[in-house]
Length: 537
Ligand SMILES: NC(=O)NCCC(=O)O
Ligand SMILES: [Zn+2]
Ligand SMILES: [Zn+2]
Image (cartoon, rainbow, N blue to C red; front, side, top):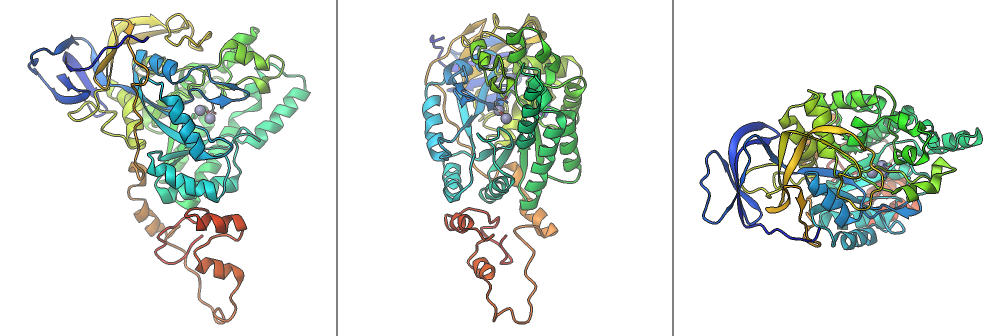
């Protein structure tokens, strides 16, 4: 993996250039890691490397906004680190990802430092989301600091009770703080309390194998949490991004909310498009446990509803949730499904499986594919058009896809040395990424992967991305927070200064000591920093 191919000037000649909004015959000229021209018949500058692309689609590199590299979870650590995971991603046509950093003992700044150190050995550009696992004034203040450092999205887990799960109050506070900071809140939407109850019930009825995992997490628990998160976000006027939507019922919640004007975005993951729950009933424990992820891979009909929702624009993009555990790690749950580390692979397979399930299946055009696998993520997470587009001035993250090549996915074909199972084992797909350029470097070409440790760059993402545009106006019209309501003046108000009123005048919402401190720290439970009509909640 350590051989290195440097950039320089490269001309991609004679291919079909595909952006999310257009497809045309053109050449792409790259210099020093940046695209300098996209036009027909570009003359090759002296000394430049020419890559012939006749018959190939030339597209923006994939963007995976949901990965877990080198993440401590369920008593172990995900098997792919930043180098092995990113190298595999490049071989599969993904050139940028956003990983989920976890706090250290609920300290999000410490978590950010830790993830930056892990990522320093990587070989691909990346950004970070930060998980918020507990609420308090320090977290509220630290969120502001992280936004200043380029982390403009925060994840809240509504499941994993006793570990990562936040309460509804914590979620509401976090959503409100995100709204204030212009940061996008992300939710893992499952009812963690109900899941824990279902798990107990299954174990006591003797179901201890991997099949207990999907049985304990029925679609209703995903849909309930999705609907709850959407409503809580609506209460504080925050946009919402729902990660790994796995069920038709959750899709319906998102669809309903979008039709009523809510700014909710739904992320599909590639496992939800292509895999089937039945595998968890396999009599071979290793095969069944390999499929354990949360929310679970679903039964008949759900994948079809997810793909239809992607085609119709109800769901916006396809990520992976790449969280790899090898078979010995999964064996921790050999006699208790609750201890099987949750997660599946996909960082290398996503582009190919999505092409197969959406484009080859006739549900999407090549432009749709670019939107689903690259542009939508770049836009939502505010790195567009630097990433997610082939145009002059954009980073030269480019892939060449040959639609004529058929190949088979599996451990033997994959490039991570850390995986001994692959949930896509034996899947035949049509269309293959034959070349990947990462910031102008030829990292995957003619079946060879050439990457260098430490060559990936952290990409800062500014707050107040597209989902925040026009929000103020929407709220002003609806008189929701932070523009209303205002208190009704009543006779005698001046004489009787109740404690809550004093707090309101000091700009503090709610009555708890923690909330007062949170507001003092510049964040907390209040939605409005610049409350235009003087009311704070
Ligand atoms: N999804 C999963 O099973 N593992 C990774 C952690 C998460 O995203 O919930
Ligand atoms: Zn999750
Ligand atoms: Zn995840």
